[in-house]
Image (cartoon, rainbow, N blue to C red; front, top):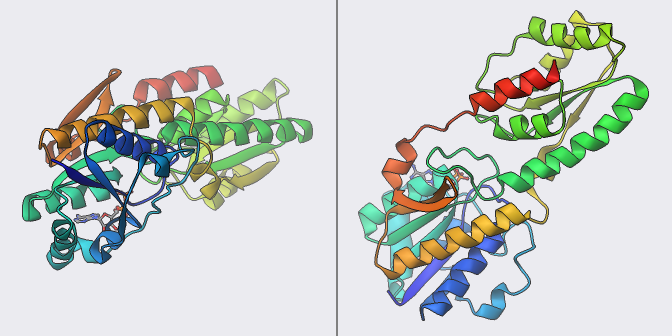
Length: 320
Ligand code: ADP
């Protein structure tokens, strides 16, 4: 394969630029031309793409977001939309496509491969760490560290005022950010969508702290576990503590990627191009036990997201 394209799709994640950079540099190394597609599948359908040089990805490894921008496209979920996208690639003699995104983007990449014959390779870029086939997704480590920095700041002010903060972090279906940031931030309580929220149990944990003179604390809430207002109301009704709430929101999506995310993105970007060089498509790349792996998209998406139950129990031990 002599000509490929790369795009970022779905929610942005820190480290996507490091992955784009790795794709471009590895392709150059193997004498393959790379087109950068703007705004994901939406830009692909419109043919919004340009040839990238080594220089285009200079000074990007440390930048959050995505230099190619990202978008969601309803048109690409239709066969006609994918047909249009395939025509745009064929017109330029492009045979392979690296898709940096989450599970939705991978479903699109899979349909594109099977229907239109475009060799697609998925690179996991999402802060949620919600893909079962890979131990880590690009952006997760940075998002956790951003949430952790915020929790550290909240702890200072909460302990000065004897207040308990309920801090909402991202995670609609997956509590990985809450779990890791909560454990590392010394949270008293961590609420995740994978476990039922038991307000009596939470109140008991907070009361136990109060009994030994501790009137401040941190409750980390993954957005999908329960509505923030409900958590505040139910805990106020059960304890005499003073509560404050903070929603971290989009702050968690930005920022310079951590070393972990840059290294992961670089390694996965390299493997993606090597697969295309060997004419392999319809696959995703990831990391398992420290090793870079690749497997068919369908197989990868059929692997359920693993909740780190042991880590959750360990966090509970430490908060007692
Ligand atoms: P993420 O990749 O972060 O999970 P989305 O779920 O929004 O983000 O998916 C990104 C894009 O991928 C969508 O806007 C759509 O164009 C495409 N996509 C998602 N699901 C499918 C699907 N089942 N078939 C085809 N394309 C899809």
